[in-house]
Length: 302
Image (tube, rainbow, N blue to C red; front, side, top):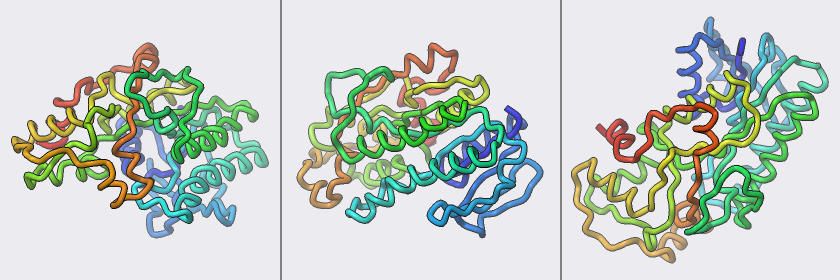
């Protein structure tokens, strides 16, 4: 890997991948839709793009042999019918623009490593999902992931190695879900959701960033689950957060109907169950630093 082009580099996961690239002395080009986020450093250089108008600074591809694709609007906003279109288009239109430009200008990109999501797997208490599972959740997220991955798969037609990481619950102290989980526990009003039995397949953000780099560095194609080796129930997640923070849990579980009223369709993020395997990732030689939840939370919440 000579130089990497990252979409979504200024986001939560992207910033950590940039840090890994810097540690490994891999120069980073990044695409952003915000001109005020453009920087021009020796190993970190920004370029403007606007996927809606098909505008992109072609200089972003100079010397690039690998793309890490993280572009996509957050799913943590209320899913109105209009915002659902934004969630989907922000993933498929960005991939399409990259494809069209590489095809037209014959840029010598060798690999694309793209984010995806475990939301593609159907809600289940009993299944233990591996990458070979061919079913797709009938939820909105299932539809998004299917179309997202299909858009990325097209790069294979250009002779480019395609890697997809189906990301689980990302644990970070800088944003994402964890601060929202921690906040009520800190104030003594934390509680599990629903029965609390739904599986949460999580990953420490440091491991996730290293996994993106690992697949790129080793030119590994295919689908990989971006989850730690030991998923937990929602109840166990809540109890472990409370244990690490040394806070009591005294409230009953929060009923599903209540969160559906508050969040609408987005409530499935809290109540759907996906127990997802990391065996394939480990079989390729990737070594997780955080195998178990409690040490991961101690690192993030200390």
